[in-house]
Length: 395
Image (cartoon, rainbow, N blue to C red):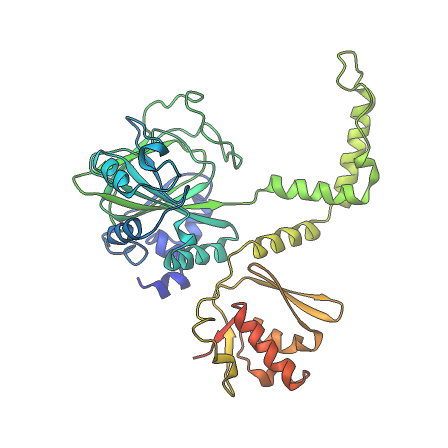
């Protein structure tokens, strides 16, 4: 499957032969899923061991850009970094020889291929997506049994890993509600499997698991983390919105409420009154719009090609289309029209709105699409759309 195909059907890229509809109905946030298949090259376009070697030997890794892990004996950052905090490449290689896993957190932030891949998932699922890369030597285990506070897809790129799944002591833990060693009894595995190159596993948050290299080859896998907003997050926003309009929510709690002899009778009555106000005044759309805008603004802009193709907007008759996967929402603000998009917002004269609608609705535009603007405004509008990654030349 080419990169163009995973851009068009990213869940199919991850889940095949299971249909995305079945996964979302029966597995998402509920139970693990393993996509076994005989397609060892499937995830090679995303990453390779050779690429990891090139990165480690060629980049100056700042603190936090590379970690190492080993279940036993444990390893800490001073074991593979200089006193300055910079990564010691030789120590990384030596510890890798001695069974430590190389971890590259958030590699999608510097790798264009992984960035495009995560962007595809974000566009479909409306959640923040992160990647952690794990390169584990033969017969080694990076982490002891634990659970994650976010759902993950595990993409086995090269080699194989043996996985063990246990119980789920915490259903859908909050973000930051991490695994506490010793707080939960691990017990015996409830499922064991080997993930081979080209296969994928889904592990919901809260499910305890561990993994170790299978066989005599180095294992490379990509963990794709899904950082979601929850109903609890939305309800907190709804309550905050009501509180902005109803001052009684902002009154102090009763004087002396922490005293052991405090009578909560009146508090219980007032609490029910406030709950009734929430029920009658809660505005779902207003809170949803805030979440939508915050999510869109927090995405990383995709401006690939805007520097090397500097002269493109100056070509007479040049036509453009909406850049694939670009997030957007159109809004009005006085005498301006605003496209809320990755990284923030881009403003245009109100008279540009008809042409912007053509672009955002999937059509092709050129300077002539902004007939209600003067010549300079038309050119500047197209240049601005191109510079901020909202449009790309139509083929």
